[in-house]
Each structure stands twice: as C-alpha cells, then as structure tokens.
Length: 400
Image (tube, rainbow, N blue to C red; front, side):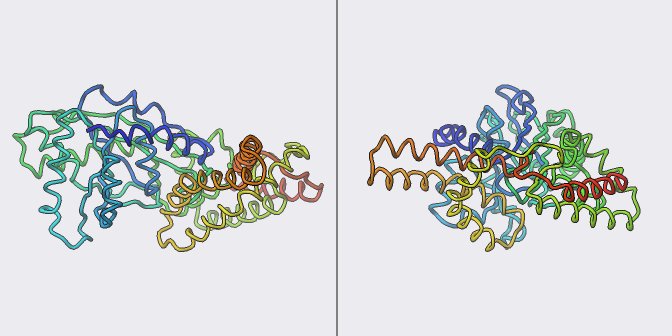
C-alpha cells in the first residue's frame, strides 16, 4: 500500500529530525531490506513516536506501523493516521478480546506483506526508558505464520534503537539494523503453533539484543544517561558495542562507587552550567561577540515556541512522550510562527524585507538550537572555574 501523503511528508519529517537531533546514525537501514520481499521490522521501543519516525525516514520503501488502538479513538485522528499507513493494534489493557479485535488488523497486515510491503512492530508491546529488552510478544510471529500459510515468506529484520536522552531533543539517536532472517529459516507449518511462536520470539530476541544496549544494572543505565547528557568522551561512546562494553564495566563497580560517581557527575554538570559551558572541552576558546549575539537573538525569537512547548511538556504524565511532544510542536508550530512573523513584518514594510527578516530570524533560531548542546564555549572560563572543573573531571575519570 503506497500513500501519497506518506511520500510527500517523509522528506519533511526527515529534515525536521535532522534539525531536532544533534546527530542521527541510521547505519544504512535500507541496505538491509531485501528488495520486493515482504518484511517485518521488529525493534526495541524507547521513545514513543520518535522510534517509528526514525525507522520510516530511514527506509526507502514505505512502512506500515502497528499503533496502539487508543490513538484511533478520534475519527479525524484515525483518518490521518491511516493516511500514514498506520494500523490499530489492541492490547490487553484496552479491555477487549484482543484476539477477535485484532483479527481484521492481522488480515490487512498479511495482505500488505504478501503484496511485498513492510510492516513495523514493537514486539515489547509498549515503550520504556530502560535500556533493557523486555519480553517480546508473539504478534509478529503470528503474522509470520499467517504469511507462510498464504505462501509468502516474510523477512524478519531486527532493529536496535538508542538515544543519548529519551527525554530531550538535540541529543544523539542511533538506529542499527541487525541480522535478518526469513521466517522459514526458523519455523515451518509442520511445527505446532506454540512451538513456532516460541522459536520465532527467541530468535528475534537474540538478534535485537545484538544491535541494542542490554543494561541489566539500572544504576549503570542511569550513569550512562548522565554521561551522555554532558557528551562525555562522545567519540568513544557512539557505537553500540562500545557503549555495551562501557556499561558492563560500570556494572562491576560497587554500589558505593556508583553513588559516588553519580554525585560527582551531578556536581560536574552544575559547574558546567554555571560556567555556561555545555561541553567537556575546557580549553575551547570563548566564542566571538557575533556568535554570542546570534545566540541571544535566537533565544529571544525562540521564546514563544519554548514557552508553548514547556507548557505542554508539563502536562504529560509519561516521560517517554516528552521528546515526541517537543518534536511534534517543533514540526507543526514553527512554520506557522515564522509565517505569522512574515505577514506581520510584510504589513509594516514590504514582502521582500519581510522574507529577508524572517530568513535571518530563522537562521538565528537554528544557530542557537545547534549551539546550545554542541561542543562550543559561550563564555570564557575564569582561572577558578577552570581549576574547579579540571579537579572534578579528574575525580570522575578516576572513578570511571
């Protein structure tokens, strides 16, 4: 099933994601997808709507995602979601007979797959902030068996997702496709249904874990999050395998060492913020007056958008939806905000001046956004600040 709206908006959403995130490593997802074959993408789920968006914009072929049925309650929203190839999937918490309720959804999914389509599914059933794969549900395995019964053999593609912060934009996102397999390689129709499902779930679990972080120790998971927040040794903590080795090493430390490290990191981050230093490079030069002026102008013009966003974020009860809310508002209200400014300036001046003015305003907003979490210095460090930061950094390095 090919949707014109999906095709039109994919490059728009891709550009918005590239603006919103400091870095996106998608590791050539399209190269892992067999051409013209039915494909079921199975992935870990950390970050609400951001997860399927990253997968969709990284695939050259359109992906139909199974989405929680509660999102389809509003008829208008339901119509929009269907234009984006999304299908409602019922969960036990929806208080319905999920086997009966999902029957038509599975039939439609099988039809799309056997026509060479791609179905995306998060078999954990819901999103979660922990970097630890939760038990997979059998929905994708059921689809695979139904496909085999219809004489098509879907390719199961595991995908690992990781974020330096699930709650913030302007962080780093990693999408890593794993070792895919055809359903017939793991199960066949001669197997009992239960055995088939168990075999498929076990194999998918193994292969998703190969391309995602599996941090058993919650304290180590939180320590990595703190280190990511200040871009600690950023070049060394990009690859999934390096991050896994690093957190495995953290997990071996005693509880007392973990607590001490957490407190030192909190202290270090406070000192960085107090010095208007959001990076770990203590020796980077102070930025020019021009750069500082652009950042201040960007702060000024971005204030209404930030205010609206923060008001909405404060209302959310699920932390994993924070990045989704921020991104959705960035994508929707920023263009309207700039168009409104264009019209206001054009009313008092001319269209040419308004276009030039809004272009400059948008540029300052973009530069401010990218500088605010990149490795730049917005102020000079005093000798005292530098000595304090170097001392705390040294203490953190010893604990690591």
